[in-house]
Image (tube, rainbow, N blue to C red; front, side, top):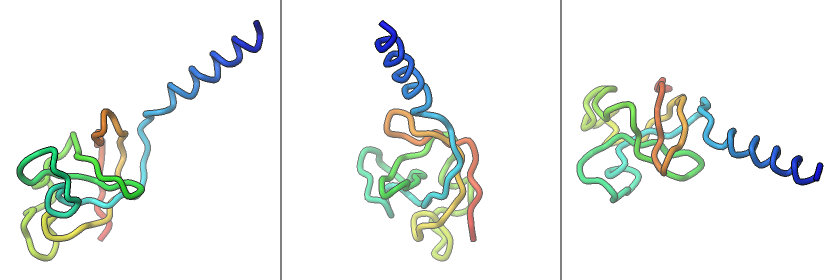
Length: 101
């Protein structure tokens, strides 16, 4: 009985910590133009974490300047950032993003 309770406790702890918000370094760009995501049409903000791209909820692609600026726009270049958020249903719920120049 104690082993069953222990296993249930471990499972509960693991499931609660699965989608915790955290701060990490990410790549930031247009999901369609730079990360070749095809599940949405048009230009939308995305992050790439550990080689996997996710569309972003919580910020717009133009919140950080003109997305089509040839030197810094997310449709033209992949930028680095320090993002706080979590992955939910194959999307990234962004709380904050600081671009690293």
